[in-house]
Image (cartoon, rainbow, N blue to C red; front, side, top):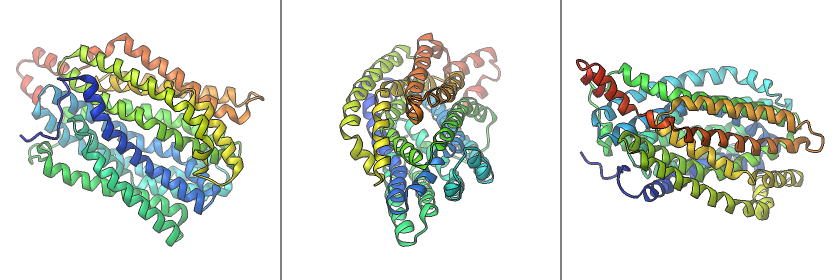
Length: 469
């Protein structure tokens, strides 16, 4: 089997593997954020701050509806990485085959729910009357494209689980270029405003998904599946759901807490809403090194826990923590010195720029906490510790809701309490994640080890359990 683009992380330097794997992910994530950045820049500069606020107020809800397919993709990637680390090719192929059924079903379900419930959810968030029309349009159009997001995320997660972080990057670059061209065409040339921005985004996502699938079929032998392998397999689907749904629920709970916070933001008017939208976009960029490192660590820990190499998993955690610390400290002077120029990219209104800059100064002090949510959570996910995803989600939801109600009602803070809430939520959630890592329960969560235990307990059907057929 030709596996020249795939990487076995169970041997060699942990730091070298993680950083080499993370760099294409970082570039890819930055291009992916270009979707949101271009949307916001085009809308803010060529349509207006009301339209920018309309796009921003949909962010947490879109995250909610995208979270199920995204969580399932992570779960599928974890299963593939562990079987790949254990050199179990048969179960790798079986997992890939069944992933398509799981992802498409979840995407269609969430698309329908999102389109139908958009008006009610936006009113629940106290979305102002002057922007609710555009908000409904943006949310419905983007929800219609969840299948494209799910397909791309699933294929990319599988390729990364096999140690290939470069290929998804190439198709994200293609997708980003398509998105920019369509944004400018639909908004400037055709005058479609918010609808045009949303339509450009989902078309670009489908382009990346289809291109990635074609590549995977032709270049990665694991994707060339026989008719027999394409038959649904209950045990593989159950494993995908068991690992993916807790991650999806974690993301859903986080999204709901962000919706609650968005409702608090909306109560302060469209100027604060616009500033909050901008700081969210900036923070999404800041998070990309963290998410890239985390994705690399998930694959690394998945392969090594599958190979039963616990010490290598620990080394990966220590080295990633040091990287996060250094990067977080470097970002603080950037936020303080360049904040006004960064915020000014999005809007021309000075009042919005002033609020956004001061907000960045608040949250930048807590970036290390943000990074230390991603590192232990990635390791725990890669090792199969699905139960923690729910615990983590509950802690983050509780913090964001509770702190927002406390800090925004302190007269001396007012709407600044929004960004204080964000920073302290990161710090608290990070402590919970790190504590879970040091408990050590992740050491016993290997799917491969569990399969072997089942095979030992049931010797007559052990082959079916291991092979997935």
